[in-house]
Length: 239
Image 1 (cartoon, rainbow, N blue to C red):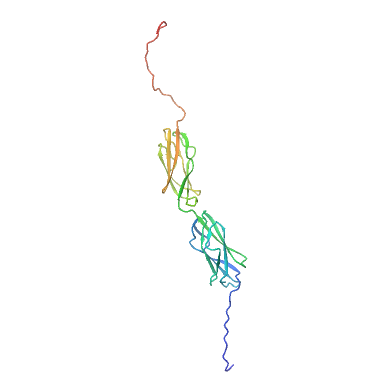
Image 2 (image 1 turned 120 degrees about the vertical axis):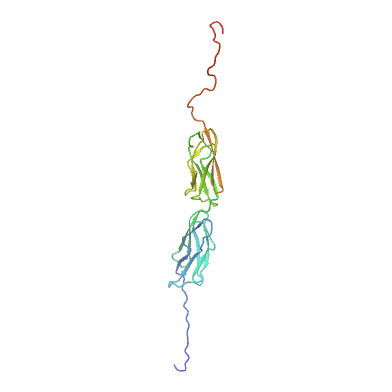
């Protein structure tokens, strides 16, 4: 209309209530048990029209692995995202964190895996203080257990077995630990009876096994003295 100044209306649409949560990043990570994951757990909240929802409180809960969250509840930012750091549980194995919030029908899950750390402890598992016949194998192998600082078995750690005293031989000199953290070697005792020892070493970790070699069954006799002697023969009346 001539002479009339047009009016301008500005409308702003806002996001509705949060309807869905989704993983943004941080899922399916691996890390050393008892340490923080390299990346935080990030979740997004959107309304029914896929608009990001700001200031929506996301509830995080540890459901597996006994790890620790930096916060139990985190509000979404302007992009509709909530971020939280996670420290894996000290036991190696699966970890899981659930994220949910008011009005969310389907919670989302973050999965991660805690792995054993560096070898820190070595202890004798089985086989110590056996006795056997000199020159024969012991009935049981010498077995060590290698773990990290949290007691998790360390796999593929090289353990070196060596005869320290007694002169015996070993079935294996260097053995990698198995999935249970064990490494084993069997001693064939030295030929001489008496105490014998074997060391097991992994890096700066050392243990010593003891064994005792005993004499076997007698297989032959030998003269030591008294052969080929002479003496005056006695008569029937006197000697």
